[in-house]
Length: 291
Image (cartoon, rainbow, N blue to C red; front, top):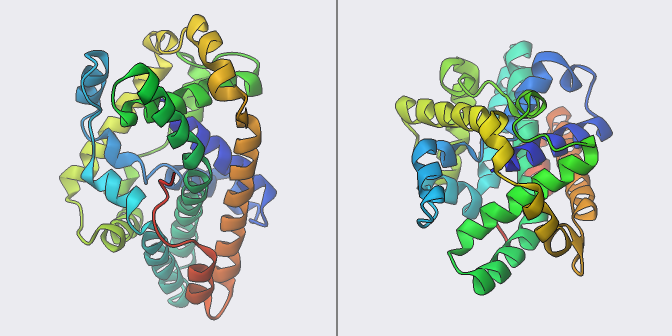
């Protein structure tokens, strides 16, 4: 479940290494970029308590048609729609609105790059575990991402952050902005419409936002300490984190590099006359859930 921690870490790392301005790396614009790097996953949180119950009861993993279309459709089109709105604000002299939508977009393209880079590894591992252990591949996809995030951040921070305030501080973002903030709501809905061919209702956006906040509460509460016990970490470390396949740390570094490239391409496009065309060339077409 803590996969969003990977996306936020990767966004912050790639933004730091990018050509982004000081303003985009700090304060409100950094917060909007952090939100942007998780909005592609928000549909999966629509019925979060129900999803947790299914997980505990070992029922098939709950799916989301919106989430599937965002990952397996044409998510690049969502980035281009958001880019067009940011440029429209810029042309009309609405500098603040342009910067805010651009910040959201940078997080969005980071997510595209990170998923496209890491999902082949995650999906291969998920299939292998499903064949050996049973249950559906989607369940093991979630499990593999969970183990990667917990083990990676434990090595990075020097302690297991599950069930701690440090995890809450890291993954907390203002998801309510997707339905309360007019500029961000319009940008997000435009992205979803471009990807999925239809627009979500305001109530659906509220459900996604609420589900994510429930998730943050759960994994950073004392309950979160039980999600990946020490024995389980020892069991999976050699198989999933550092073993015959290589190292997740190396896979993460490659994903950060791709995310940085996507951020830089977006910034270059935003400053160019033919920005939309150059961004379309820089961002890969097709699904981001590969492998």
